[in-house]
Image (tube, rainbow, N blue to C red; front, side):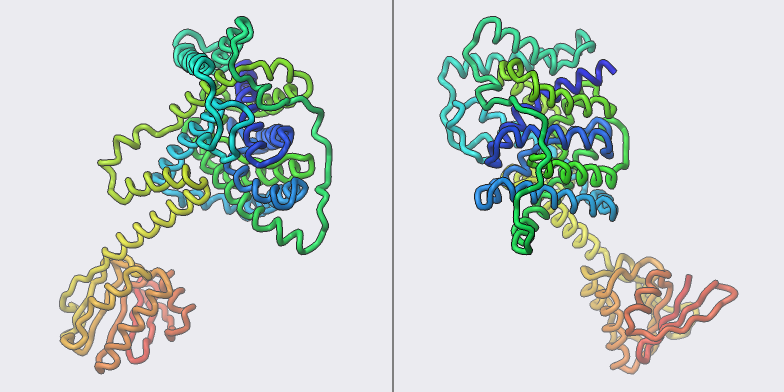
Length: 515
């Protein structure tokens, strides 16, 4: 319990500048980001799919919100967040979270690498003079760098924080290393009065309890048309980032499952947040890594982080605003080092070139655009590569039939689907084949409508040549596809020797079904 509470305190301290910074990116008041971090963090900690995960306001969502806030105002943002939550609830109830399984491992590697780089770039804004930074979502926007003397002290304090985090676990694990780093560096800065940026230089975090507030927007179809596109994008980004973080935390903690529950938790959290003046949120990989590596493994840590954050807002702001940003940057830099999949650099030359390309592509797209686009692009490219590789597997072994004199047998090898239909059609030598041809699918599978069309095309060619074609060893799901397609007439008879024998007539051709 002690470790869980201390992990929660560490996460809460790291959440403050992140929430404030993302509120600035979205163009809203800092308390809007802090309230979102508290409410989303608390609800997902209570009912989320993976204990140990931390959720709150994120940059991936903030960069989408900025256009909505600029054009229509913050009230439309609150309405959008409510709709976003409802869409995520629907995804959870429909169990759409299971589709995260379709994300290949190279995409996951690209995701964590890209996110590590984004977290690193986001910290660069802390090395700039407050009030001169552009809202780009990354730290590479405009703005003036700190004067050399402040920069030198800032860098030294960052290095000291990182050193403490690295050394502490080797000395004692009584206190989480990131919390010790923040405490020691904050003590030095306050004791010696060092002139470096502090949390209070970003904005005041003082406030009251989140007030219940129904978004002040017209309940019209026009309003729905405005907020729906943003809600869909935000819901998709939030779920993708949350489910990928869920998998990443699961790899560390050795736990699986919970995708649908996490979707429901995110939906409930965002729906509630929209009615309490929050900007919405999703899982935060950086804070989740801080929590897990500080020893947080249960729901207690996430709940504690949210409650500590609320305490900072209500009564602790004078103290929290004195914490130097250098300490928090040092913590996040250690998160970057721990998050980046360094082994991916070693295996780039060992894995297939297509996988190496996907890793690099997803990493670059995450940094240049956003996580949702990067994951979708990575999955599409991986799917195309997989389809092409399977399309080239289609071939046939030709032999004489042992059961029908003079008949020729084509033993089809490899899957028959939209990508392999051209190769399948080209396997047959209609002009030179005998009057009876048998196509054996024992080592193949008919997968889709394109495959049915290819079979019909081949049958048509043999029909035009006045020859007979017989298809054998189609699986039960192939029978169903062929039946549903409506191109083929089906007759089923029981066969005592082979179970069910199914005969399909293709114009003048015959399909002979097996088991």
